[in-house]
Length: 223
Ligand code: HEC
Ligand code: HEC
Image (cartoon, rainbow, N blue to C red; front, side, top):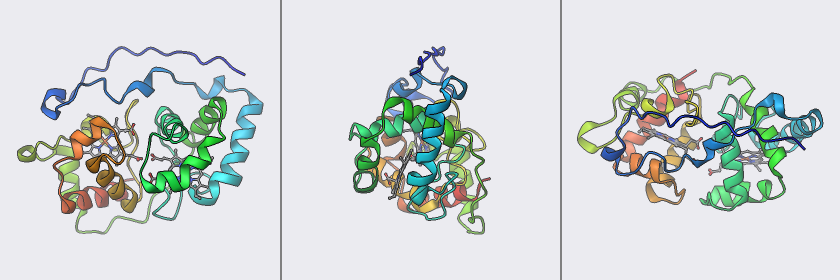
């Protein structure tokens, strides 16, 4: 076993307006309080996690997390704290749309904390390969929403949390290169609260289907 070092970050000064979104900033970010650095994971745990990643998870997510099938999210280059939080949410059965239940609850039920941290470190260290998206006419309107939000509809700029290049910021997941079909489904799940996360429910609640499609096309096209 290894010690989980608590890294206490100063509270992030929000560039987005929490009040405008109707929630308080700290919500949904509890996962960021404890992060294990890759170099703190012992060799045996790391080797075990890599084997699980390649032989088990790789069937769907690809050996390096660059899945080619749109149903299976890309994990390569994703933020480690986000990956670990999602695996714990599947294990706790709190991330609950039908695909999460059908595919991931069983997968995560057998994972202990140290394997979860090592799997998260494994995927976050992989290079995100460029996706096949990019030529859709939706990319340009999607970019506008991503960077500026939709003022009249209370939709905030996605870039303020997910980063200008969509590579994620410490506490917020990477979205660049993600399969558009997967992103679309997550936005719909946040909107309906089937995936029950207050912060993203606030963001997605007023998005229309066509706007979600544009954002998803833009994100898939990003390197
Ligand atoms: C049989 C296919 C399958 C296998 C095997 C599988 N997954 Fe998944 N995984 C999925 C699907 C489908 C989703 C998307 C669930 C959803 O839509 O909510 C997912 C989602 C995830 C997510 C959330 C990604 C995000 O961007 O939020 C993580 C993390 C993850 N899987 C890790 C793993 C790990 C680690 C393993 C191996 C222990 C694994 N998966 C094995 C199908 C699979
Ligand atoms: C206030 C900060 C904030 C803003 C603004 C924001 N997000 Fe998020 N987003 C989050 C957080 C936090 C998560 C992780 C939720 C969780 O823990 O499950 C997330 C998760 C997501 C996910 C799921 C990623 C995955 O791999 O499953 C998608 C897709 C997403 N956001 C899209 C968007 C889009 C599109 C916008 C702009 C319209 C946006 N977000 C604006 C904070 C934000």
